[in-house]
Structures are given as C-alpha cells and as structure tokens.
Length: 326
Image (tube, rainbow, N blue to C red; front, side):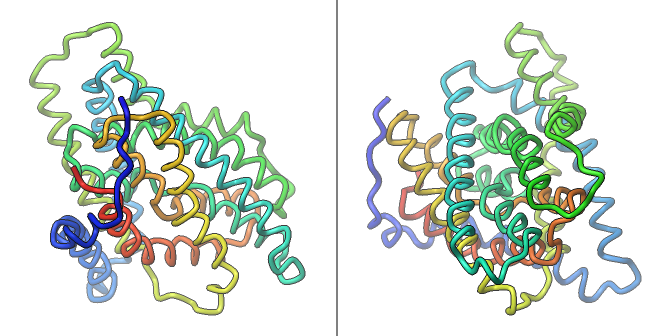
C-alpha cells in the first residue's frame, strides 16, 4: 500500500486533538511524581520495584500474549521489526561517529558508552504502549510490543552488550549470548511468542481466558505511567551539554530515519503513525541494567532517561501532529 507523505500543516490544524490525547497521560505521570513527593510513609523506589515486578511478571505477559494472539498474520509482522532494527542500527552508527568527535577529551569510556546507549534504545513499551494505544487505539497494541521484543530488546541484549563490553569498566563482563539467553526467559517475551504461535496454528482460546487477559492488560498502561512519574527526578543541568547529541539522535534523527523507511515500505497510515511514534520515544529504562552490569556511567545515563522523557513529552505531540493522526 502506498504511504501518502504527511504534511506539517496538520499539526497546526489539530492541536486540540494532540493535547487531548497527551494530557491524561501527563496527569497519570504527575500522580507518580506527587506520590514520591508527598507520600513519605512509603519508599518510592520500593513502590516502583513492586509495580515493575507485577508488570513484568503478570500484566505485561498477559497483554503480550493477547496482543500477538489477535495480531493479523500480515505484513506488520515484518514491517514493525524491520523499522525497529534498522532505525536502531542507524542511530547507533550516528552515535558512535558523533561521540568519537564530540568532546572527545571530556568523555571517559564509561560516559561514552552510556550516551551511546541513551542515543539508540527507546522506551518502546513503558511509554510507547500507553501513547500508541491512547492515540491510535487498542487494536495497534501489538506495534509497541513488536517494536520492542522483535527489534529493540534483542538488539539491546546483543549489540548493547557489545557496547557495554567495549566501553565498560567491569571485569566480570557478560557477552551477547548471555544477553539473548536472558531475553528469551523474560515473561513478556514468552507471552508474546506463545500468543503468536497460538495465532499461527489457530488455537481457540476459551473466552474466559481472553477476558481475563484483557483485564490484566488494561492495567499495564496506567501502571507504567505512574512508574515513570515515580522515576522522574529534577534535571541536573551540568549533564545536559554532554547529552545534547544523544537527545538529538534519539528524539529527532531516529524518527526521521524511521520516516524514510516507512516511505520505502509503505504500511497503511495508522500503522505507519504508530511505528513513527515508537521511533520517537525517549531512552529505554532497561539500559540502566546494562550500565550497572558493565560499569558504565550510571548517573549520566539516568540523567539521559529523565531529560529525554521530559523533552519527549513536547516532541511526541509535534511528531503526532506533523505526520497526522488518522
């Protein structure tokens, strides 16, 4: 299907629609921020860890299974992962070249590794899923999951591990094979594979189980947004100059690369918009695990996550409006 080139004028024609979609998500994020600030009887980090455990082991596997079980066996099964992988590799190339020439004398290897991770891997599920489903509909919930589990996460556990080994300071390093082994044991990945297999072989799932998975899946988006609010911290401005190129690559270059790919492969417009939004998501929170494992600069990467998330709340509506809502 031919993909009609969107026009930037649509953003100015429909600002109310964009704000209507983004505003409720911002309110839920603000609830997490306010909880951390005013509920002093509970440690925000502990609450976030509990939410993360529930989402990772219960709610997200159910949603992953259901979304992939309901995914039509059509071109999106290769279009979404293809754009995800090629966009990430393009951003990785840009990041490596940029940070080899940018402030070379001011960046240690551990800092350079952190900003490369921040430039490439996006928050496809934790932020992408709520925004894509809120803006484009639940029927496209499989797009963030495919973008993540068939693109971003496999690359993080393989290529990201190689970045960690190259720039990290830890001696007890793990290679890409260990990373892939960890990925295939993650409950959301197992749920996604199970759902896709059930779709391929036309397994009839009892309706009561489908309804249970739907109820569990509806909990994912609000819990993710609250968790993001719990994780946000005041920006430490001394890090911002080091993060400038990473923010440009992650929030501008990546969606532009994705847009070029979308023009080439021509998915239907709603699917193209969802993929484009995914490419414009901020830095993935899971990259912090790799910073800790390989001895990269955790403070700098944490700042990249915070700053890119805050900035994306302004860039994502521009992307959505500029390239058109269906």
